[in-house]
Image 1 (cartoon, chains in turn brown, cyan):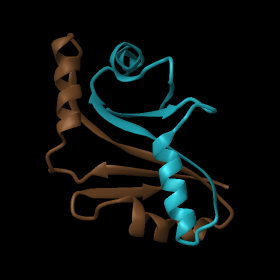
Image 2 (cartoon, chains in turn green, cyan; image 1 turned 135 degrees about the vertical axis):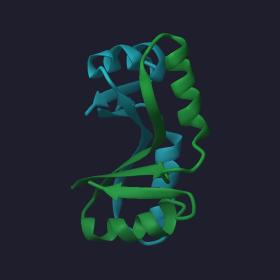
Image 3 (spheres, chains in turn purple, cyan; image 1 turned 180 degrees about the vertical axis):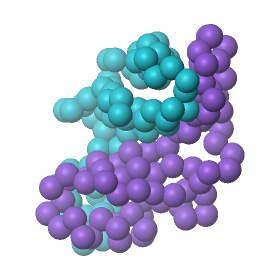
Image 4 (cartoon, one colour; image 1 turned 30 degrees about the vertical axis):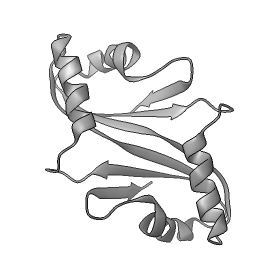
Length: 70
Length: 70
């Protein structure tokens, strides 16, 4: 089974990559209010119930990131 | 309006980060068949019809990546 995990910087925290992308788009004439850049991890697993544990142990930093399992 | 763009390495192409994550998880006893790691870009825009152009011009590399707009 394929499981998708989205790991993004916590709201309100500095997101240098997001800010850089926003500036590039705005400098090129696009109306963009905000940009957040994070990671998407697509896992092919037999047991999806293990994914939460995998994420919390190895894939995300709780101090600066939040995650969503889809 | 919030638009989400998922940018992942093309299937079959070398995905060093995905392979590293897979090895770590397997070394720690998790049964994982495959892992792909990519980028998620969340944009707050007024005109969602411009997102495709933004992505194709600035956000992804067509040689090694593919994207999905959600």
